[in-house]
Length: 303
Length: 263
Image 1 (cartoon, each protein chain N blue to C red):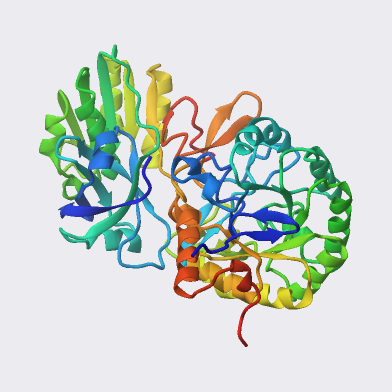
Image 2 (image 1 turned 60 degrees about the vertical axis):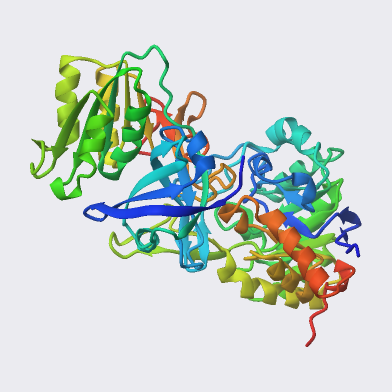
């Protein structure tokens, strides 16, 4: 029996629900040395800014129990360089390309969306949740009015469906998600990293040069699941769920909590084959549990 | 390129204070390993420690299909690694990174290593045997020195320094290096060690105008160049400096291009 793994998000078909999460997969070229990119549902490319960005001083990574902190600070070559040098190669793969965009101002988000109009990009991911930049990033994602405004503006300038990527560093994720839907956002991806820090007791110094960073990995999975569940109850737009997914079963849990697709992030750092391993494990779960269509799982949590 | 592989441990032993030498049956890694490259090892026995540990290759034998690493126990991850036994398996990705690059017309090479940083330069010395090789290795004390016979066999001339003078010259290995540089200049230097040592070598390379490659270490994520966490500052005409990836653009960099104060 063939299992249907195809899902549709904002009208775009993905061959399976596994999307490599932004910032953990570069522009795909490194992982392409280890896996067949044609076999994953989609790739959310490394977060882009209007101008090239240097990124933060190292150390930028710290291991914590069942997780890790990062403070890369959006190091990237800029949207123009991406369009000219990375996109032509990426478009050769039979997978969906989601471009993660980051602005210092609402205007910058809109300018980037415009530059990407008509380009071979399937979706935009409006990143209003990066915890590692001084301007913009998470500052846009913590207030419902700001979220509504930036979503609405970008929607008006975008040629592709817009996913809005949310930060978990808020009191009530539901009001933020509602603001996205009201602003015309086509979908929601969540969660970005949880703000955290690590200290070296011996040297009495923080491990990250930036002092604080974003926590990811299995440590945050329960938070992410809870937020996907809460958001799915209050919005009608599709959700791409992520946060600590390391196995096919983790992915299924997110689908059950209400996600239409999933992002795999930190797992890509542990093994370059993680995305494919997870696709295979979801397929195995479907086979063992007699699930013919993956879409049956979305929101299928029995409570 | 292969993904992570389970490799059998064929030996793991304490070779000096807190320092272990571990041998793996890893034909795919051994066949491709070049000096200066590293393998990225998953911490055994504790799934809550997610990140792999990047460890330089100390030796590799294509014919016998083994790879050796030397590592120091610095935290819980390396402690768990030190506890593995012959017959255990480790999850290994590699070899990764760009190794040292030594051209065929090099006549004389200085390799300089400090502590566990001596391990990758030993591999370099043993592989680049078409050239004259002087090996400089420094340790805190004689207790921390390891495998001296192996170093002896891998070069034409071995110079050792310990900070307490228990073996060889009493003081820093960089002092021995400078004495030697005053007498004769090599075509190329290769170095790996703690940051203060690397800074001293970088200054000497400049002062004596000797091309020099430094093998850097940094807290690392994926090891393949995707996550951008293991940054090191490299001089750039336009912007002053840019951050490059230690894992993929390095871990070996030209001494004149890296900015160790920014890293």
